[in-house]
Length: 144
Image (tube, rainbow, N blue to C red):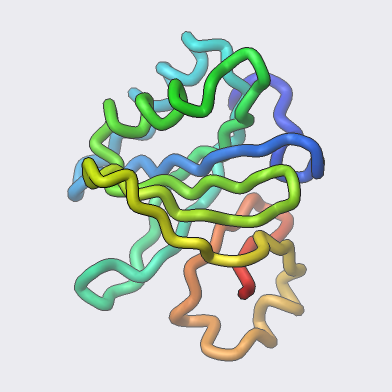
């Protein structure tokens, strides 16, 4: 586990979510090592999303605090180093944006990043097609 982590529960800290399964290759050990060597605080989580082929995929992901002494650009550079197709950025107001590493710097606003208990999550409509993050306690979903 990373250093003390509070970003996704602390409303003042922005964070990004990095996935570890790049084109079928698990990079979680390498990513975790890089995050530790950079002194970044992070928490391993489960990321679930709908792949381009319409199949729901799971991967070990990392919620990474965006500390003030690190530029956002540094964290995006890290995602590019690991061939991330995109990263999820959540700002201080918990607005979520998917940032694509496609050379065009394109982005997609996804709405509010909101926590749900397991019971609440199970009541969500079409939950089998949702993209979500699970931290062991809560399911986090973006809601427009």
